Image (cartoon, rainbow, N blue to C red):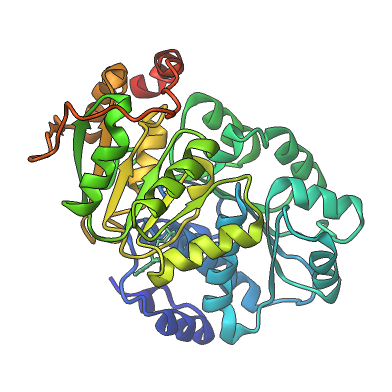
Length: 400
Ligand code: AMP
């Protein structure tokens, strides 16, 4: 189908044309009519499926009519990057309508955000903590919000935002439309959705399984040979735009420095970095200045970079959800991508779960010509052995 069939406001139509969307993605096709009707919605979709426009477009349609100058739509997101990205989408699609949106997140000064809010905006995209902070300062009035979006609700809960979310819910009018997006629906997320949505419609695309456009391979390796294997992969099969994941912030930084010393245009992105440094890394990755971006799971949320050819799990993630999120950064909107996982013997359990989620066996590869018996790198943090215990807690997820 084509976007015209939704009969959006002509100024929204021009926004859609300006960003170059022609056909709605599956989540858009299913969610947009429901949201336009005014119903509450549970959208089970990963980043990369087009879920942002699936809620932004119908919200703009609502905002095209009625009063301006006060906050009518509130979008909660777990990270600054995701908030910023949604803000860009609202800006691009809502440009011709003259809708004003503000992104409010921590790690940067509060005053400019408060000042912008006082000047007036119809859409606020916020991380929960900063929003409460601004509300405490009386910089934002939430009493006339008509639509609430919880984006990446599973991740917000993982990050401990649930109490903040509950407080925010208490500040909003009862009579509102609520849209709830989550990549996964484990029991605690289902409960949360059940407690805040009214008679929701559920739309689901490829629930919690990695996108079909991604091919997967494991590269079994010992911890001490990982760095050399990564270098060999970056010289060989993974020569495109590569996102590398590690388990911790310190491993992210030390791996990015190691790769830079080894001659790769590499940068790190992790939550301890200043907002400016994170933006620089992200912009550099987007523009091609950096071919390799090394990231932690949390910092990688909301990384919306086109044409990531490879995702490499330098450290395996600690759950299938996290695996799905990571590899969702490649193979977006029907382009193909590759996910390589350097897997240690202790990752066996997670490997089998990932295979279940993907629905078929995943090839274990040996890189031809690589010296598997080469020197073990000293000074490298050993992988923690806590993985198995953490995976066990996630077992229920696979049994859904
Ligand atoms: P999202 O899942 O919202 O992060 O979107 C992933 C990417 O898909 C973004 O780069 C969007 O600009 C792009 N996108 C969203 N909807 C469409 C569409 N209908 N056609 C083409 N690209 C789209």
